[in-house]
Length: 268
Image (cartoon, rainbow, N blue to C red; front, top):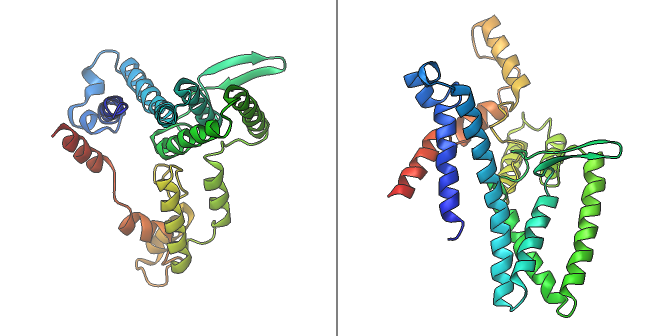
């Protein structure tokens, strides 16, 4: 309830950004806003940055609030639990809010949309509850235990990010995508991919079937299209079963229409 007003504000900002201030946005296509609005590019950059900032910070705030409220119920230090929980959430993702100079170059830590996003709300809740539980295990030396544990987690994260491009939250999806690279032409394996991908989405990890990238079985789809253009029929196409033909067309529901319906429901 505490975070809801900020989440609603972030959602409306995202709506304005994606309908007006991107070239193929609905209102921009309809009313050609980019042609008559002065400083359209500056407004576009502003709303895009505001969208990313608010919707990312909300997840950190939720991690703080969950840990603080759980700690308060157990008569623990809620401020300590909240701060540590937000720190853990940041450590578990691959980017931060600043860029700094190191002894051997520049440490680039910018706020990345693929890092802490609204998909990470489940992760924020789990981390908040875990931090509160951890404080309960060290009643007499809470501060010392949390500081040591934070140092250990931060050290592991530093080693991890120095050698791996993706963060902790993206690693399961990357591994799963590599393991299932050739599963897209078997209907039974395709069902397994969809099931696991949806489970990953439920726990806040964008699965390999995330349509935002637009690359689901691009090779198979192109080969099917080339065959149809050459032979002028769809008999004996090389890949009759593929992710794009089955999942994208029949199984995926969402997009701007779903978001608009949600906003109308919130207003009501």
